[in-house]
Length: 365
Image 1 (cartoon, rainbow, N blue to C red):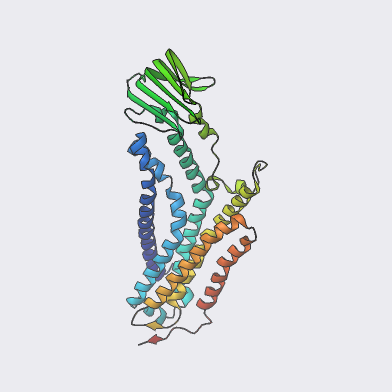
Image 2 (cartoon, rainbow, N blue to C red):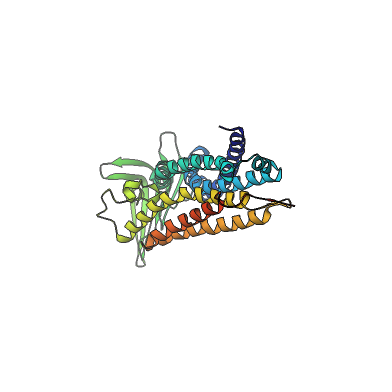
């Protein structure tokens, strides 16, 4: 490999890593703040919280890597031009394709990595994320054993526990159920335990009373032992509907059983599959856009901010169009060819612009 190739690739890799890590950290932080409730309301440990939110990183990298590489190419090639290094390379007889080769090399590596994320890492990590999220939100153990906290595991249900001993026994229990219309039930008990039975989880209350108000009438029941069915806490885990982001390509393309899926769900899965194919190739499109802006045309000593600004505007339009077409494909199958055209047409156009048949750049004072 020529030295200029290694030199440019080194700068591109450093810039890409720096921009990717910075953008991913910022976006991850904004996403992680949405789950602070697990720490505040459910007593989740910091370690578990980090594990949960870090599972979002592959999905974030998938979206961030193409624009991050675009910014890195703009920065690197603009710096090389400003320092006259690119001009010297051109004076040595290097064509635009020779100068673009390092960017294409880094882009090829980025495409491979992005496809690994899209086809494997994202489904695996996102499924773990959704499973853990469901367990933290719906698991009766994590919700009921919080001491001194009024928990709301489901709408209309409030649970309070004063304390819990080392053996897992609970004291000072209050359960208020207001889910049924015109009916309100309050149960208070001195102690209780969480039990597993063949029929599902149960909450055994000891030495307490049950007060029910139905249609304005109060009924009171004192008990020494009362079993409360809490299997509905865990039903949401087993019945959780899979998100399209946690499915692999065979499932998205219909190679698995889809007999129970609606037409809308099938369209949504097809759209996700095509998006995973299309999105990594935006690395090629954005790479060509950045190179077209900086190594084609005439050199201007006053800077290239106009070309860079135009390239950023075009890139923003392309990315927003890709995101919009993703939603359109989920409702209108005819938009699938449009999504591929929106990717390929800019690539063809910029390949023509950057081609060697365009006269070499002349320096402009």
